[in-house]
Image 1 (cartoon, rainbow, N blue to C red):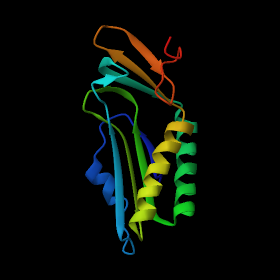
Image 2 (tube, rainbow, N blue to C red; image 1 turned 60 degrees about the horizontal axis):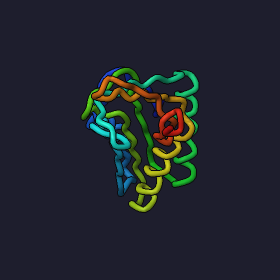
Image 3 (cartoon, one colour; image 1 turned 45 degrees about the vertical axis):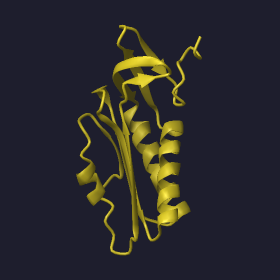
Image 4 (cartoon, helix red, strand yellow; image 1 turned 135 degrees about the vertical axis):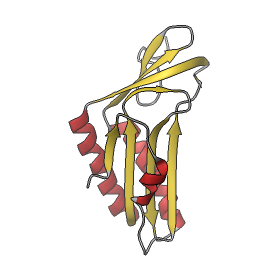
Length: 146
């Protein structure tokens, strides 16, 4: 079973959490990233995510494998949306379980940062004024903010 996946439809955080259950785990940390109504002073109406699925899946799995080894996790999983999302939709879900909370918190943060950095998923923000713009993984406009 893949632990990283792209989802064309809404993410069910409760169902995803079940994937983390492990009898030896003493901690579970979950991160949910939601579409907000603004970015860099602009009113956002919706987002479109596009991904190169074969590479996104393999890179996402590699990140989770590395996190399990690095942080000694019991389980790790992540889901990233694709397609069109509106304000309030969950765009990404990351969860880990570990024996202790320090490892769980550190791992969850590391995983989302690595996903943003390494997984080929592109975000197009659509603004209330009718304009749109593709963003780099660090959330800066593709034109560098010019």
